[in-house]
Image 1 (cartoon, helix red, strand yellow):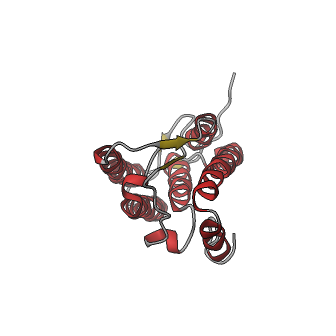
Image 2 (cartoon, helix red, strand yellow; image 1 turned 180 degrees about the vertical axis):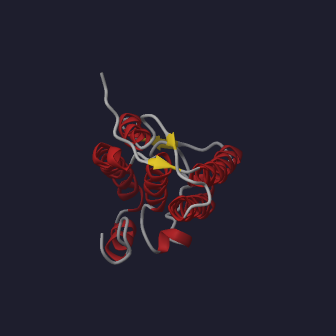
Image 3 (spheres, one colour; image 1 turned 45 degrees about the horizontal axis):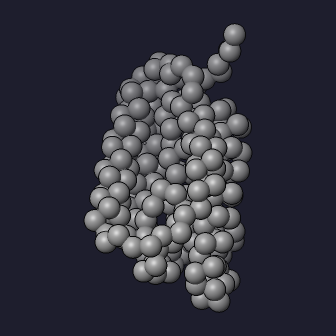
Length: 199
């Protein structure tokens, strides 16, 4: 029998997560629509990245596993502070995902790929970090764990997310290096993967 250790949460935090998730989902639908409208051209896909998408997804899902105990006074300081943190994280995640997918345009795809007309995107969030969409998903994972009272789940969730992300970017960067060569190397030398100027 699994014994869950969860923190009590408040309705404002759950509402903030639901609202932020809705914004994120709308941004995701927009990205898919833009990618589908693009003309059909030759593509190179890294099919192995599907497995790592699954690992990444398990890491994200870990933040939502377990019971949710709604026991905080909705107008209490703790519930409102929790809601502010969750809302900030989710607005950041949705805005970062939207800006990144807009910058990518037809280049956006769930699975790693390059197109014959692919361009190396270096504008918008990509001018600051090379993988802003993964940063957005990281923010979403933290927000869900806080909103649901499952911060202890991050002990498992974050390593799984990190492993899945690491192998996904290896496939993506290999495709980009193959297509853009020294242009990608120069970009990678100038722009860090996840944290500007650090990592």
